[in-house]
Length: 447
Image 1 (cartoon, rainbow, N blue to C red):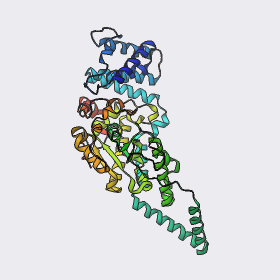
Image 2: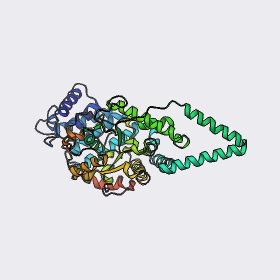
Image 3: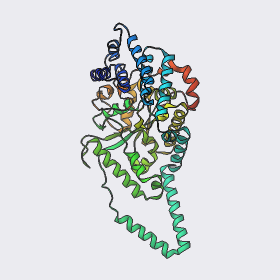
Image 4: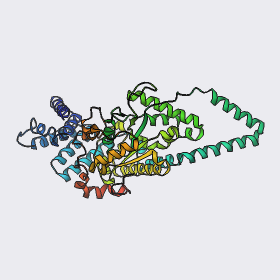
């Protein structure tokens, strides 16, 4: 809380010295964050000074309105206007002006889309999300099924070669392929810490789960979600998993394990200190769990975090994700619904096709309602000691989180206030957002 307060004061000073929309937005976000110890806002009083009447919050509202008007008049960029309208949403929400907050939020999202690259918007559209999920599901029908499909294709290729060039030529080709495979330099086998993915849609509580896991002495975490497995999959392409041998696919898994061990700072190969697991919390890995199962085999562990679809949709829609995150799909109701449905389809597919021992579903609502029971079950599944007091205080983590849930993480641990936050905006969500979801709206049962 002290660090959040200091950051809010710094952003306020930066804004007063050289007004910038981004500084104002950051200041508003930080000032209205919750103190993890007192459940009070860390800097609501900062809104009462320097912005007009010190006895009320009206001065800040006036300053916000005036600055937005002047920015528009001066032809400010769409991204700057979006930052100002996002700040207006946060402030109006704090003031419990729900209609005003919703208006500001929809305007902020519209401005962000106006500032975005049209090609990126298309790639993040509902149709693209649906098509991408279908392609991934087709590429990874299940570990055993994929291996059988690869063997059938190879047998068909061999048969065709024998028919066209003769059995002698086919045998020579097989021998040459085996010789090349034997001559390959393969990555060293990796012992020690295994990895555990934390995946799901954004704003489902994954940062909270990541922080709780990372607080365990037997689990290493580097603090935030960085792309690693997804980049390796992108380098080789989906066809790699259909065309290459089991050894080649497993080599990719060894490369990944070596790189994530290095990234987590737990030592060189074989030197894993006390870590039994390393957390990889890149949410985009939900697309590549099938590839991970093929490459990691029985070592795969993945936690799928799920939350009430209404809460997830609202939380995504109200979050100003940075452009670099690639999550501009959250700014449009149709694209938001399309991506959330695609993520759910992927999750359901992995749950249906991958080994039960590899996957664990964590319900955000159950985690908030009974963290002791949910964390104990999670640690038991991983095979680590459940006696971890620090894991019950994820808001006290010293790790550096920068994801969208980083500020909320510092609120009182497992607080209930966010469970029904979407209900304040239910009339607006029912009219504009929920019709695009096509998802179950009740909290998912924990697996």
